[in-house]
Image 1 (cartoon, one colour):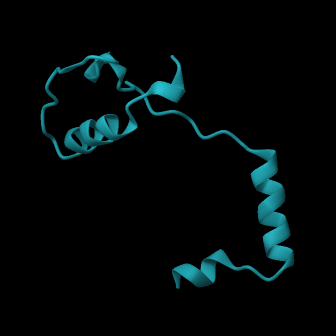
Image 2 (spheres, helix red, strand yellow; image 1 turned 180 degrees about the horizontal axis):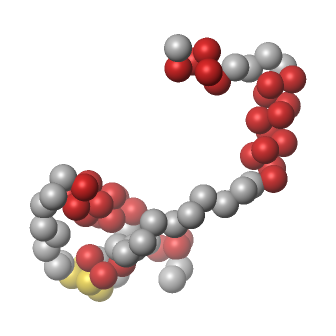
Image 3 (cartoon, helix red, strand yellow; image 1 turned 120 degrees about the vertical axis):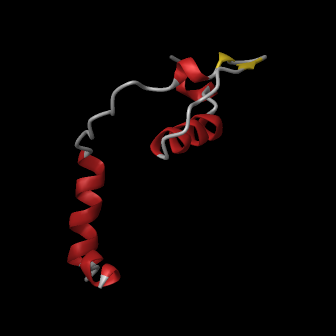
Length: 71
């Protein structure tokens, strides 16, 4: 699947409908075809990102505390 041309807004709305127990209609888009079929059937597992980990370490060195933001 080419992720650059994925209708994220439509997929987000379909996911929200499913989370609230609503049926998702099958609908066609001229550029994407059947948009409902693009929904993932299983969650994608998070992947470790070394660059992001390095950034978080650097932020903590500079005094950033994400737990204080949520308090």
